[in-house]
Structures are given as structure tokens and as C-alpha cells.
Image (cartoon, rainbow, N blue to C red):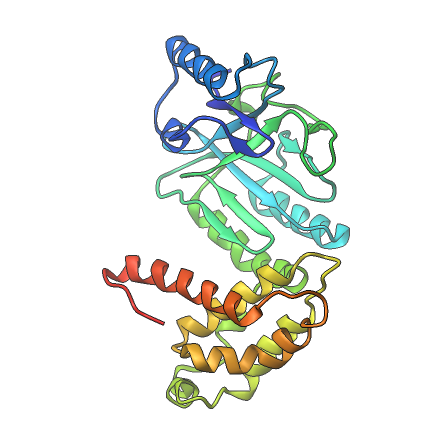
Length: 292
């Protein structure tokens, strides 16, 4: 059908440097080399390895994947309906762990970019998604309730452009953030720029503080959402100019002390690791590194 696919173990692709696969078309000789690499890495043939099959996004792929990574059925269904309203009804819907859903469309226009957000991801210029095989969490096969890439070409899909994707994210990110712990764009914009100077001096604006505390309050070990929420809150504070000490002080009660009885994790050390990760990311973006 002309799709770019590679073997994966669970959700991890087996081929080193797989990212380049999304930027060129594979020939039969290329696939033979892939099969040989799988044999070398696993000691078994492709079929014997029980590989999943992933699609790789990039310039050579005309696909856009909308990954709704939310376990709340009502919220997932709400976002699906918004996707259909903005993008159109797609026959390519893949289910791994319900109510999480992936919806697929076809690129239209230029400027498509992948976007990773809490509970909601867009795959277009990079990344990969498993299409066929066994889901590592449920131990059940991935399901395509309607059509699938095995039976139809991408020409049957509605075409969407970056402007539509931007509109979709503007509407749905705040909805996803409510249940997934991310700080939505609208919430980040609550504090006006005129208050930034006071915030950087350690005086966190009341409205912004309330937003962060609401996000931290929904942390639940049973839902496995603590890491995503802490990363989101720290990232938001760092982008607003807070120092390492200010972040530690703010998280001491609602995060460190709240969960200290659950295990022996050094959460202050974990906060430092997250801050260093953001510093590296921000340093690469700005052409220089900052130290914590």
C-alpha cells in the first residue's frame, strides 16, 4: 500500500537510526536489510521475533496521526467528536488500550509538525506509532474497527492542513489537561506579563499559583499521572523564570511531603533531574546552556 513500516518490540523500534526511515521511501532491498538486522539483533527471523509493525512519520509519509492518550472515556469521546468536526470522519481509527484512540488523516499543504502534549499528540513530521501486533499493556492485538492500512490506501482519508491542527489543539489541549495533568495554554496565559517581575522575585501571582496547585492536586499514584504533572508544572515555572530554589520550595508541600510516605524516592533529587533536563532542552534552543 506504500506505507513506511518497520518492526518493533512492543513500542520500541528494533532498527538503530529508524528516525531516518520517515524521510525516504523503502525498496525491497532496504526491507531485506531490515530483516537481516532484526535477525542479528534478536537471533531470530522477523516472523519468529513476533514483531509488532510500526509506521514511521516524516517527509516521505503523507500521514498525520492524532493520538488521544486519555483513559477517561467521556473526555476521549469528546475529543474524538471535536476531531471529526474539524478534520472530518476518518475510516482509519486504531485502538490499542481503550478508551485511548489514534485517528489518522492525510497531509494537505506544507508546514506540518509533530506536537507532543500531555494526553494529546500529533504525529506528522517525526515519530512512530505501532499499527499491528500486540499491545504491551493489554497483551491483546491492536484493533482497527473500520478500515485499516492493510485494506486501503491513504487516499481514502480526509486531508488536513496545519491551520486545522492548530485550531484542534487550541480547543482540545485545555480539555486534555484537565484529566492528564498538563498545564493548558489558556492556563499558562492567566498571569499577565506585567506581573512577571514580581513572580521572578519569588512572589507567585495568586491566580497562577492556584492553577499550579489545581494541577498538583489531581496527582494520583493509582492513575500513574504524577510524573507528567510534575514535569508540566516545573516546565511552566522554568519558562516563567523561576529559580531552582523557588521551584523546590513551591513543590515541597504538594509533592515532596505529600508522597514521602509511599516509598523511599528522593523527590528533591527527581526535581533536580527534571530541571536539568529542561535546562539542556532550553540551552540547545537558545544556543547556550544554563546551570542549576
